[in-house]
Length: 101
Image (cartoon, rainbow, N blue to C red; front, side, top):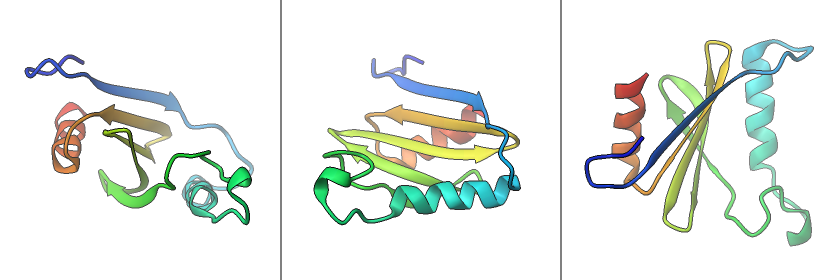
């Protein structure tokens, strides 16, 4: 989406993969894996980017990534996994997500 100030807001949705464990438990395990500390920097899950923070997005546990002035949110709900990215303040990002979904 192109916002009124000319910046971009990117919202992606994909079908959440089928896993041999329940959806809520799978999301919890994926979020825990994303937050796990690496013993060495070369083993870091996200390379040189800072580790994500936990956040609630639309009532679901999610992840907040901040890198290079861009905020990216990840969360899963209703059988879909979502990401939203933009160079906006966090509060504005959460409002955009609520308004669009």
